[in-house]
Image (tube, rainbow, N blue to C red; front, side):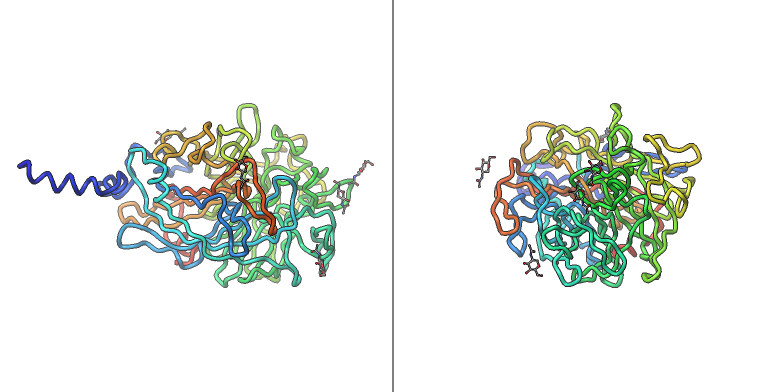
Length: 492
Ligand SMILES: *[C@@H]1O[C@H](CO)[C@@H](O)[C@H](O)[C@H]1NC(C)=O
Ligand SMILES: *[C@@H]1O[C@H](CO)[C@@H](O)[C@H](O)[C@H]1NC(C)=O
Ligand SMILES: *[C@@H]1O[C@H](CO)[C@@H](O)[C@H](O)[C@H]1NC(C)=O
Ligand SMILES: *[C@@H]1O[C@H](CO)[C@@H](O)[C@H](O)[C@H]1NC(C)=O
Ligand SMILES: *[C@@H]1O[C@H](CO)[C@@H](O)[C@H](O)[C@H]1NC(C)=O
């Protein structure tokens, strides 16, 4: 090659980013970035982190309120996911914060959902990108907000110190205004008809929302799950009950089959009568399957036990989200509470794992579902109950993967420190003919509305830390997912 022909080439290379140059050479992740696990003879591959993005901690929504907590739940806005000719992907996500800026105390904040649009430009190389360049791999922009209502009144996120009966159902309501429903919103599923299923931690109930945010139906889980203090229903999150879901350990996770006929919910950790609300003993979480084909006759069809992972201490890594893979297998996001916005910057476990219920015992509609019914007295699972099998899969806490995107685990607590609370999952097809079982796994964090420049219920606030609304995308091979089912689930 003559020297002069190199000059325009060098010029061209300088004008482009490291990510551009690397992606030109490969259409899929570098093989050195992959790790795999085998479940029932099938190989599931984590091909690594492929994108990172964030919305700044001090962003506001259309009502002037701090845009935070959004990773409590995410779901693709149906029909919007698109694979573009230039190798990028775009679409819209519906994101759902929990109960507002509650770092000091729960507040009377109207629960809501937002639409966020994104452009994904996967980065498949091994070189470490600087933070600013990495953050361009998933561009996120706020679009709009829908507020939630119940019985014509705004919902609240405040602590439900009162109980009110509406059409025979006992609801958690705010003290300040007796008939106002309060929800600590956590799970979200979008239905074909434009409605949503939303799960909450207080009840812990599952609500059907109209497309404009009106609560139109309620699913009450079995009696064993309902929180009781001295034998009386009490939905407070200020203290743990003696039986039922523990404080802030409600119906964290929600998913549905692609057709929408079956709805699944998983509690964050064990019930009070099973794990005593202690990290050492609360690993056996109940998992529910409802038949919602006929919404007027919702039926609890099955119930299983999921053994959550534990540290060597041992302390349970409670779970924050699930996602349907097939009728027996689900992704599950289990984690500690360390990272940006948490008390310790160094995290040990945040992972999208897999559980399989094919050989698990169905305990639905048995005595275990009655008030105070227990499948694990003192935290020991009864011998006659076979739990789901649990397999670790995509570990977010991986220095090699994080460094490729200018991110890290542990001190310093700068903008590159990963958030503490990852709480959502969503899948979309990669559409690579060579790897037809490859999917993008989107996951967002709940930053607890922590910003130095916040507005909550019209009042300014300054939290001690600032945590952006972070989002990650992995590429994974899921051989047990039937072709077309992920597409059906997101309406494409
Ligand atoms: C971290 O990712 C690398 C690939 O980039 C992999 O080789 C390694 O096993 C992973 N470590 C853990 C703990 O998952
Ligand atoms: C629930 O328990 C709290 C104390 O933890 C108490 O203040 C409240 O009055 C109780 N609510 C009901 C409805 O009994
Ligand atoms: C309670 O409800 C009344 C009537 O619906 C309303 O005027 C009042 O502002 C509400 N108070 C609070 C604290 O939400
Ligand atoms: C439950 O009973 C105990 C003992 O009688 C009492 O001290 C406590 O205040 C009661 N709690 C509630 C919420 O009623
Ligand atoms: C918020 O507090 C931080 C220290 O915690 C301080 O550096 C910052 O200037 C404060 N911001 C505002 C807007 O008051």
